[in-house]
Image 1 (spheres, rainbow, N blue to C red):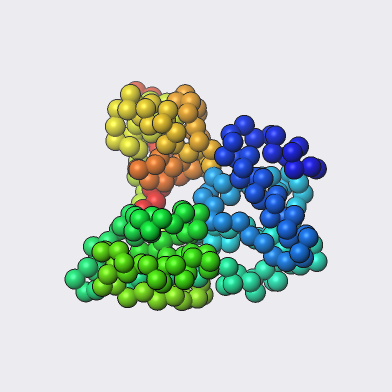
Image 2: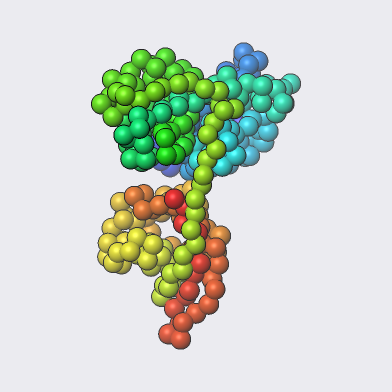
Length: 267
């Protein structure tokens, strides 16, 4: 199938560009008989590309983000005579970890936003940065190898990291991620998206409708702008600025017919 025939199936320009870049990487892989890879992708982007690969019946790829539950991942494309074992030998050649150890007076004070904000201040593109794993003493930042020299030179020019210790370590030495989640219960009048967003965001229905129209809600990897969209058990929901959620189950109904839902909320 030709490149033009594949990308014409996508309505959004950003999605067409995303798929086009992937097709270029696949072409390079075949031409050079060498592993190629994308930049870091968020969950929605990875979902779009994996669906495209399935439609193309392309099985010569691997999705990898440094650890099993990584939210930001790259897709590696390998030659037709290659295999996953071949790719695993190259995992550490495309990404490493920049470890930031804070001075004693700052330990425990920085959040994910502080680390990401600092990296963005340096003018880095988000797609060059993978997951950021934060713990008490500092953070591990997964990055593509190509930006390592830049980070080694410029990270400590930021006021927040001036006294920090910066080390580059193998992805195999990554600090163990702690994906904390809590289970909560909510009650909604219906399974409409605006009802659920309202409860999870702890805001009014009117404000929830605004959040949806602002394209801040992703349901199962797709940005949804229709507030009447129905949500079902098992659905994954991201509300930008509020968190990530999974609808675990409907555990009952109130006397007035409201749905009682068990929700997993990820920190």
